[in-house]
Amino acid sequence: MGQVRSSLRRLTAAALTVLATAAAGLVATATPAAAATVPGIDVSRYQGTINWTSVRNAGIQFAFIKATEGTSYKDPNFNTNYVNAYNAGVIRGAYHFARPNISSGAVQANYLASNGGAWSADSRTLPAALDLEANPYSGGYCYGLSTTAMRNWVQDFLNTYRSRTGRYAVIYTTTSFWNQCTGSWSGPWNNHPLWIARWSSSVGALPAGAPFWSFWQYTDSGSVPGISGAVDRNYWNGDRSRLIALANNT
Image 1 (cartoon, rainbow, N blue to C red):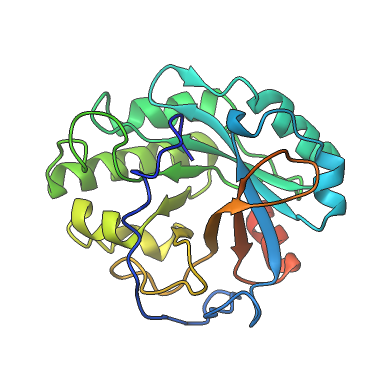
Image 2: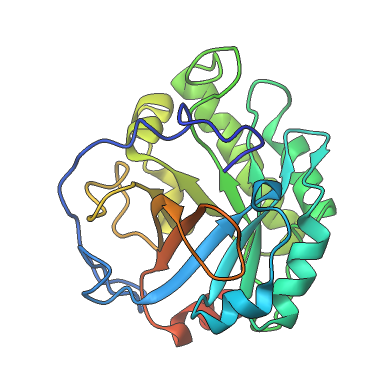
């Protein structure tokens, strides 16, 4: 994910132990085979032209699609991907690659909401995701922010996105980044779905305070008909009816 597809972003996902907790209609699970059987992907311009009908026919049920980054970048393929995914029957959501060192969280949340990250109760639109991970640019692993400053930035983004859309944003992160850069902050997990990145056969330990995961990105080298080359693969932690419930805020 992000404008620069670099292993610097998520190599920090550590080898960890499984935390499984059922809550809010979700069934936590150690492996995809157990209960998390709703497959999805996340994409950006790096996947090129996508045949979304082929993707859906291959069994992919949801997708997060890169919309924005920072304060001025919009993925050039977003509009096409977002519409074509919807028309193919894929439940989709936008995501924003965070740049906490270049503006306030509110500025970036507003940019996302105004450039594809809005929400509607149509059974196919997920709340947008905040992609918060290791800095692939200059400025340090945690973007040069203290743990307090990072917490404040994230809260500013989340509050603004909710004010604009009425939804709690999904948070994409790794356990190691979150715990290091926010100081093991547990504040968002009461309301905000966790999208955990760990390229492994098990989810492992979750960020501090997170009772369960909602989405799991388990590889960055998946293969899906309709997409040329590698693509990130994900699972939703529950059945399709619960995914639609998240989409509709019910």
